Length: 428
Ligand code: UDP
Image (cartoon, rainbow, N blue to C red; front, side, top):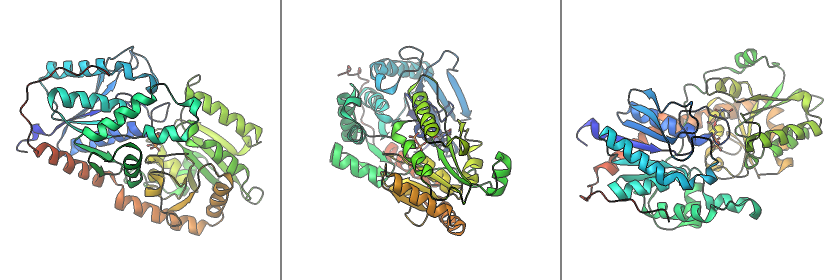
C-alpha cells in the first residue's frame, strides 16, 4: 500500500455493538473483541469504522472512540433490542443503510471484517456488490451450538444460519478462527473449502495484572482470609453457572475455610439473561448458599482487573466456548482458571500449568479442581504466574493486532478485479 488513506476498514457487528456496556444480554466477548480490534488497528494507522444496529433512540448515531476509530449505528428495522435469532430479516436494510453511509461520505470500504453469521451475510453482500475483500470471524458456530442444545430449543433460523455459515467459509477471502479447536470444527462440521487463519483473541496485559490481591481485596471489602471463587460473564444456560454453584456447595473446605462465591455479570429483568439470573439465585437459595454467595451485577471493564486480582480462582464452566475472553483476562491478572475442557479453553488454559481443565457439567470434577487450588496457596500463585506469562506470550492485544494488520495488508495488496458496481442479490 502506498498511502495511509488506503488503510481503511469496516468492522461489521450487526448485533454486537462495540460502543455499549459489556456484560449484559447478548453483549459479551464479541463486543469486546470488535472494540479492541478497532482501537488497536487505529493505533496501527487504520481508518476504522465499526457498524452496528441502533437499538434505542437514546443511542448516538456516531460514537468517536479515538481519532481514527468510531462506531456507526445504522437504523435497520425497529429501533429496539431484537434477539439475534430474529435479526436476519433486517439485514437487507442494514446493507442499504451502510451503502447510503458510504455514498454520503464518499467512501467505499475496500476491506470488511464481519463478526458472527448475521454480519457475514452483510459482508458477503458488500463483497458481491462492490468487491470489498471479506474477512470473517464466527464467534460461535451454529453447527457446534445446535449439537449442544436440546432439539426443542433449536431456533427457526437454524437452517438459514447453517447455510450462511457454510457460504461465508467457502467465499470469504479469509476466515479468522480464534483457536485451532474452532478451525477443526469448521473443517469437520461446516466445509473443507475456504481459507482459515488462526489468530486468537487478545487482552490488555497492562490493565489486567495491574492490581495486587491484597490491595484488590481491601478495595472491594473482601476478607483477606476468604477463599474467593469468581465467575465473570453473561447469564446464559450455556455458561454452566449451575455447575459452578453446585460444585462450590459441595466443596470439602466449608468449615475449615471461608469459601466465598462471587457471580459477576449483568442482566435485565424479563429478558433471557434476567430469567437465567433468577434461576441461579433461586438455586443458591435452595442450596442454602446465600451467606457466602454474592451477585455484584455487571462489572465494568475498569473494575474487572480488581475483581480478577481479588479472586483465588476464576471458574469458566461453559458447556461450550469458542474462545472465552474471561479465561485470558483472569490469567493476565495472575489468577488461575478452572475451566471446562472444551473449545477455545483447551487452547488458552494449560492443564496443571495455568489452571485445570475438567469435563463440562461435571460437578464433582469442578469441586475437586476448585478445592485443589483453594487448599494450596503456593501452587495457586505458581499457576497464576504461569498464566500471566502464557497470556503475555500468546494473547496480548499488541501481538494479536499485529497479526490482523499483516493479514489485512496482505489482502489489500492483492490485485482488485475491475468491475462495475452491481446491485445486491436478494435475500434467499
Ligand atoms: N464482561 C464484562 N462485565 C461483566 C461480564 C462480562 O465486562 O459483568 C466481559 C468480560 O470481561 C469479557 C466478555 O464480557 O471480556 C465476555 O467474553 P467471553 O468471551 O468470556 O464470553 P461471551 O460473552 O463471548 O460468551
